[in-house]
Length: 260
Figure 1: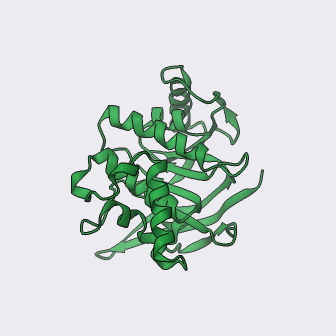
Figure 2: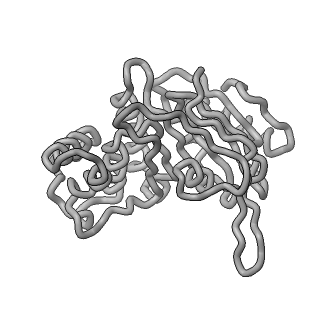
Figure 3: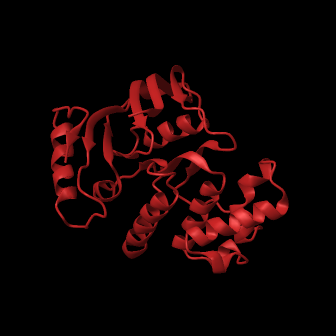
């Protein structure tokens, strides 16, 4: 399968108060086009930093990140953060259309596209509201719509549902999968890299789960999820993944392609 992202020999360190913290060292990863990849691991192993490097928001010290050239008129990557980061002085539809302002689209086309993305995430009727009038789950939907509006070929998501209550979180997981399928081009869905602390969430959403540990961060597990879609929570997939992850943390490295 064609790789849309290839990371080779990536190393990254930050220096603060004279002390250097190596976050990633000699890190290697390939992501296939159309893959839904979840990255899990404890705090401080470089999960969010890795997304920032892929998004071009942080520069590696050594190594390279190769991203396939996007189709004409498309954006390579878009990043959805843990908090929605909406602009409070803009209405919802204006927030969604913010990234389109750097394109050649006219104002009417931008507005139509933003409205279409709001319709896609189920918030078409809330276009004229202000961010403070939305619930946490609604704000995250707006954030997702804003990312999708620029038509990224790769969607990066940094623990986007971690601050939500359990019911809202499960609802948004299902909505994400629905939108992921809806944005497929032919039989190929959008490539997603989803960072989470929640192994059950990873097992429910992803095709493949990469587990990071250590300082600097390294891959200690790479697991293929073979459970059919749509999945059922509590079907044992998460239990099997938890067991595999524990083996990895126990010192047994799980090879690429290990199926669950």
